[in-house]
Length: 353
Ligand code: NAD
Ligand code: IPM
Ligand code: MN
Image 1: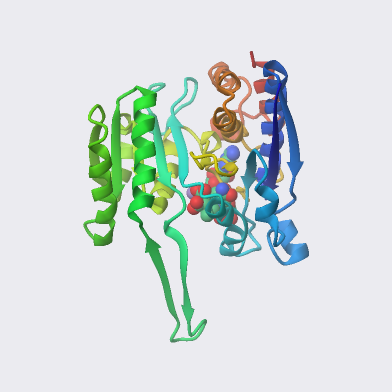
Image 2 (image 1 turned 180 degrees about the horizontal axis):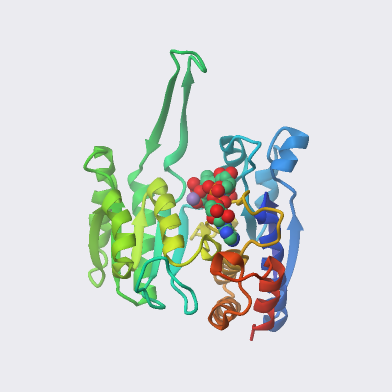
C-alpha cells in the first residue's frame, strides 16, 4: 500500500468542480492499485482573499512543503486584479518549490475534432517543456510615479545559464524517453531580444550531449504559425516561460479544447512537492454551471501519479479518458456534447480498468 498526502487547492471558478472529478477518479484508481490518498483541502482562493485580504496565509508555503504533491484547480476571479491572485498564490508556489519544469502535452485523441482541417488522431502529439521559474516571470520590477502622468513601469526578465540548461536538458531527456520523433525544437526571440541568445547557446551546448536527438530552432512568431500550419512536425518543444505559456494555449486548442490540456509544474529533483494544475484557468464565462470539461484536470491527475511513481495508475486514467473520448457519448459542450462535468467524471471512473 502506498500512501500520499496531497494538498488540494481548488481555487476559483471551474477549478472547484474539475478538482472534484480529479479526486473522484484518483480515489477509484487508488482502490485498484493499492494507493491510499489523504486529501488535505486548503480553501485558498479569491473567496479567501475577500475574507482575509490575501490569497493564502502567510505561512502557506511552509504548510505545503511536507505534502507529497499539490493538486490545484485554477485561480482567477473577475473582481480581483489577476496580478493579485496569481502573484498571491500560484506563482509563489512554483518559485518556492523550484518547480522549474512545466510539462504540457498536446495530443489529438481519437474522437476529438481539431479546428485545423484534415488532422487525424495522433497527428498532433507534442509536448512543450516550459521553463517555469525565471525568464519573464521572475517578478523583478516595479513602478515609479505610480498612477501619475509620469508613471514608469519596469520589469526585468531573468535568464540564467543554469536555468536555461536544466529546462532544456529535461526536454532532451524526455525526447529520448518518448522515443517518437526524437526531435527537440527550441523557441526564442533572440533576433529582437539579444539577451535570449543565452538560451540559444544553452540549447546548442546541451544538444551536443544528445547526438541521437534531432534539433531545430524557431522564433516564437514562426513557431506560433507552425503550431497551426504543421503541428505534426513537433515532438518536444523547449521554450522560455512566457513563450511556453502562449504556445501551450495554441497547443490546447489545435488538439480540440482547453478542457483537454493537462499540465504539471515539476521539480524533477523531488526536493519538495510538485504542483499539478491544468493549462486552463478558472473560466469565469462558464463557472458555476457544472459544464466545464474535467478531462484536463483528470489527465493532470495522471501526470501526478506518474510523478509519484504510480505508472500503472497513470496509464489506467489515460486509457479511460481516451475510451470516453472515442465512444463520444459523454462529453461536455466544448467537445460538442451536452454532458455535465460530474457525468464525464463518472464515465471516466466507469471506464477504468
Ligand atoms: P481560461 O483558460 O480560464 O478560459 C479560456 C477559454 O477556454 C474560456 O472560453 C473558457 O470557457 C474555456 N475553457 C477553459 N477551460 C475549460 C474547460 N475545462 N472546459 C471547457 N472550457 C474551458 O482563460 P482566461 O479566460 O484567460 O482566464 C480566466 C482566469 O483564469 C483569469 O483570471 C486568468 O488569470 C486565470 N488563469 C489561471 C490559470 C491557473 O490558475 N493555472 C491559468 C490560466 C488563466
Ligand atoms: C498558465 C497561466 C499562468 C501562467 C497565469 C495564470 C499566471 O496562464 O499556467 O498557463 O502564465 O503561467
Ligand atoms: Mn497560460
